[in-house]
Amino acid sequence: MYDDTSYSGLDVEISEAVFLHAGFCIEFVKLPSSARGIVELQKGEIDVLPSASYNKERAEIAHFSKGYRRERMRLFTHQVTTPITNLTELFAAEYTFTANPGAYYGEELAQILTIKWYKQRFFEVASVTQRMELVKRGRVDFLIEDEISGLYFKRLLGYKNIVLHEYVVNDNAIHFMLNRQSFDYDKVRKINNAIKALNPELRRIEAKYTEWIKGNP
Image 1: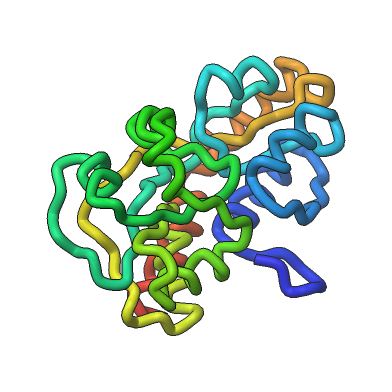
Image 2: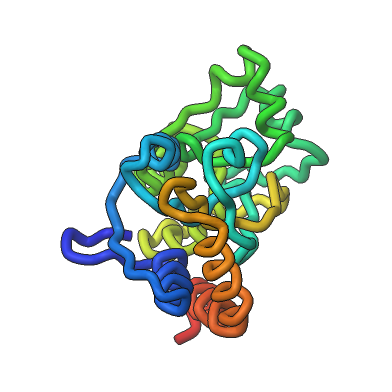
């Protein structure tokens, strides 16, 4: 999150802890989407992109750190709660979806979006608050979002009518993408050692957010 003066949030706190422990100073830069972040990283305009899922295409342009937490991509919906066995069922039923441009949602969705008829009902919107507003107003049927992030903004915005569907779209580790020109293998090793050493602290930071989501102090 960004409030015109400072940055905050789960991955911001984790980034600060890891890079401080590894001996690096960091400065956060606001970018409009994950897609833009990857472009700027590849151009060398930024050095680090947090909260990044691994895939082969991304590994060709950047180093990846060890995973520092798990990310579960889930479905947030206004009213569609029928159980499903796969994501194709929802696309075949002509429901509509919104998601973050450039984010990785797993191979299941990647394969679905190779079909033009399905992709026409998939709308990428950069702002998470705008994505949730689309669901709240019934303009789209589903938001695909990181579980912690979605639940955090659901409570923050007071959207009690948005519910979490039981289906898990994707569950994987997330990493720091590191610019190859800025990070040699020794620097990558320092980041990985910091992630390993700080594991209890990173779990504490994550627990702080999940407890707040649940309404606990």
